[in-house]
Image (cartoon, rainbow, N blue to C red; front, top):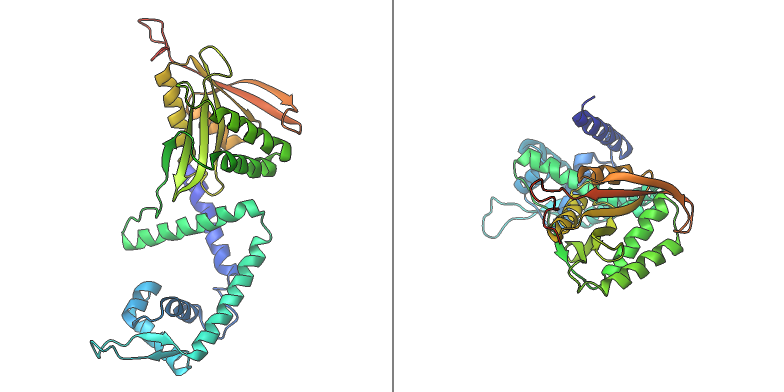
Length: 328
């Protein structure tokens, strides 16, 4: 199986299961007597206030003849009503009747309960992953159909230096992620917060830097280079974390790239980082940037027993001078 198949096949399987679990294989949907297309018609018109048949055809991605028959059935059922545009009598906006509004309220209640029931089977930390993953995939499908390459509504930027809220936000992301993956608790989160707070007071020194990934004003990732605590020409890569729902999007690679480039410019002979065994995706990213596993041991310093790992990336030495590039 190719790498592409490793991604495509599970997505196809999940898509089929979604269709079945959401009830789209049945003749009616969302606890109503209506088909899926009729339910979506009520949702879209209710959400927008009114739509013409032509607009509805575009929204639902259905042929105009199919929409015409669908609308006629819902008008006859008393769910929709047609009005005449003052500007053009040929344009007939569609809106919900009082009955249609009641039907839409019942649909919303049904859907809300369905989603809540599903999310109750997941940890709260994974809710954002589900939300963002579905949104990204739906947008990608629409772009493939329309040929319009849509950009993310809020592009992620990388900024340097202290930012209000970064200490608490980084501690929160670390606390949530490591509680889920390795069972850490209050002790670990407090260590992250106190360590980053102390480091933030040293950001005025040229050997130290902090990067934050920002989306719509919110911090969704962090990484720092502490050029002082290990001594010599060794940089310490610390507090590398990306928010749930953003992993795999390239944000982590961008943050790590900024940190490594900074160390190369500053002329550090090597970069060290500590992590935990079993975080395979992070390890692959570290190795892609030239880090190698140097040491592995069982530790208790974070409040529970884990296998700690130390990775090292050594700077390239120029053959002509024997110096590291950009030597300090």
